[in-house]
Length: 132
Image (spheres, rainbow, N blue to C red):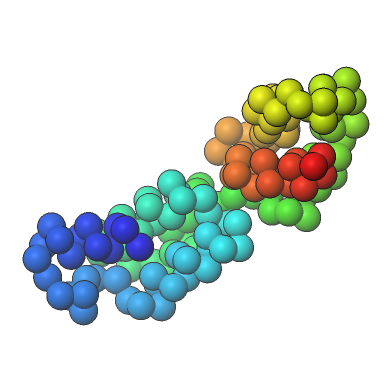
């Protein structure tokens, strides 16, 4: 992770001098891959680990309210409902007005609280899979 490299450069220390256990670093990566953390949230969790916080990454993310509450399974019906509700814009999108993707992403994200809003990259991917 870039955060780890940055910490090594700042402290001019070998990798084994970082206060982050390899299993914790791996868990941060796993949380990203599982769409539980976006990259911004992962940086915050990793920064907490670098600062010496002794909790595991998932606990840090939960306590700091950084976990994304919606993954693919939870998002699918919301994406479907949003696209069904905006059928005219779906037609315009399919006719070449690809900039409407931002509108669709915003509509899906508005179904969630600000802190629990899902990753826009995941929403984009799901919308594009459905429409392209």
